[in-house]
Amino acid sequence: MAARHDEFDDFFGDDDTPYVDTRADGRLYRVPLGRLAPNLVNPRTDFGTPEQLTDLGKSLARRQNQACPAVSRVAYLKLWPDHAKKIGDVDYVLVSGERRYRAATTVDLPGLDCVVNDDFAKDRKTFMEAVVSENVDRQNFDPIEEAYAVQALVAEFGSNRAVAQHFERVDGWVTQRVLLTHLAPEAQDLVRKKNMPLDAARALGKLARDNGWDSTAQLAWWRDEQSRRAAASADRAAAKKTAAAKQPTASPKPPAKVEHQDTDTEEFYGRKTAAVAPTELKRFSAPAEDEEGEATPPVPVQATAPEATASEKDQQPKRFPYDNGVYAAQHLIHKMPPDQLDKVLDLLIKHRDNQAVPTS
Image (cartoon, rainbow, N blue to C red; front, side, top):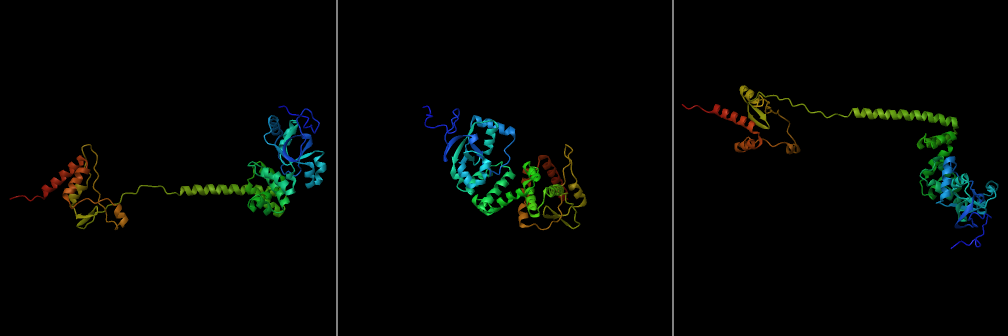
């Protein structure tokens, strides 16, 4: 059904644009830019480059997804009566959305969608909260603008603590941001361009506030601070490199030196055995070569070791069954390679023949 224009007279006398009479009732209206002004208490100063505003304006020409909150001129001037001449002969004042207003002006849009609600102008605190909260909650909000926004809230709420409690923040959240307002414009520009980290900027802001530093003193401090930070970074890198160099490298333990005892007994894998004659020792300990010419390592002789603890005993290998010939033979048959077992058998047979008593 076609709209009935006789019910909604064009309040601003523009027959080509569907603007309607606007009332401060919280409804959505299309307001001509000539009847709209940004508020004068917005702490935001950076609205983007001309190119960025042009791009945003073109986007608004296609579709405005977010309406701009506004209040009537009368309600606004009740809060700031001295702003009457500055806002000019307009009917409505923006609460937020000044960037959209500037973008629309850049591309000569006829108007903006606004929600006009004088509840925003109940008092200064309410108005300032509406102005600032949208920007403070933005993730990419310029830290300097955020600082001035919070400072404006402190001016209306009366103290840092009052602002912190109202926004459910800790007191330090307010203090850290307000400190940036004490920076000189040159130092603030470094923060905006991310050439000065926020921790340094807040430290400098406190020094500037407490000592009344001007721009020259602030920039001199920052030059010295950069040198201190570079030196500290170099020291940390050197300490890290030194610590890495001191890390012990794992190396194989050298084999224990074996010393034969002169006593009549030796400890052989934990068992006391009769000492072997030098000739027999040489015969048994010398590495024999198999058919392929590989040396067979001798059975090591272990020097007397200190008594092991209970846990160490549990971890020690089982001893060879010297006191059970059958079990020892079965153990060798199952565990020893056949070629080595043949050598053991030859030695045992030869040893038995040498021990045999000749018959008369």
